[in-house]
Length: 138
Image (cartoon, rainbow, N blue to C red; front, side, top):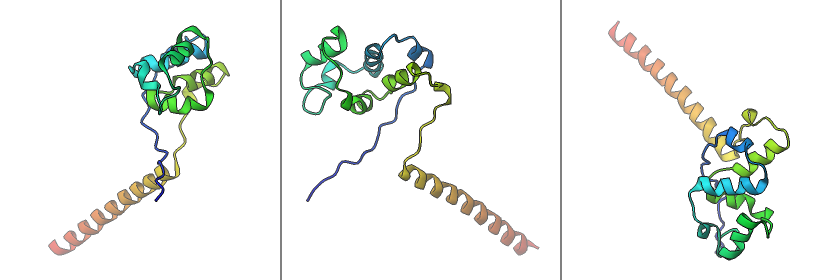
């Protein structure tokens, strides 16, 4: 039996956009991301981490001797539970961060539609009950 990992994303913490705008580089945005997470280096290293060892992570984040593995950016932001690097990149490319909104997944859309339908059904039920109660007392 093969087990598949669900691509669920954690809830991301909000970041002050002015803080993003003050970062002079992507490296500083990566550092900010980790700082805001409150997690130590070891949370981002090892077999399920961004890189395998702490020394390599230190060279990436502090000295600029190594480049961040770009294919691990989503994992990094998921672990840190914030999207500072993504927001910095958008800001550096001239996007208006105040206008951004996250697209909903198909599952989120289905859940929203079900909730909206439930609200409408509850309203109809209350109306029907009020009509029955009105007729019963008349």
